[in-house]
Length: 239
Image (tube, rainbow, N blue to C red; front, side, top):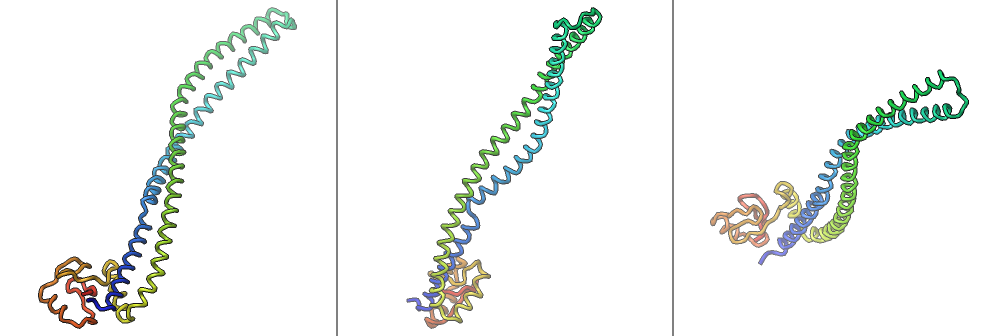
């Protein structure tokens, strides 16, 4: 039968291992990892959007300049037509000059219409690119918010568990004698958080290595309250 002092030490070790597992889970939440990966994708996508948006705006501005020029020419044609047919201009030379200007303007309008169509065709793929990236960003933002919320909830649940374990640890710690607890606290940080392990058969459950038959026999002969260590890893062995 294991001495009560060492049973208390095992309980403390089990508690510390549970606390370590909770802290590890909190530090390595799948939701946080997924969120970090998603945010990296969003940052790269934002860079693409920052490149595409000025190109879209430049194409839109070029189209508008052409449309504005075409609207100005059409307004001038309408103005000249109104004067020509208003009866206020009677000189044939003036009428001919006005007719020539209208002809020139209509040719210009025709050319501008072609350019506007070309500008629209050039703009279309850039508009589609910006729209697609924006849609992807919107969907990613929604997913990021979902992951954030899920991570916050998971962290809150783990924090509650951790608080309960830490509170219980104080009770477990008080049951271990000061000198034994000091040795345990000294060993534990050096050995992956495990300062005490059971001896099962001839194997240490801390390092999972077998002890020699001679060593096991010597350990069995020690008093129940004697502090013994694994010859392989140096952990306190609970017999």
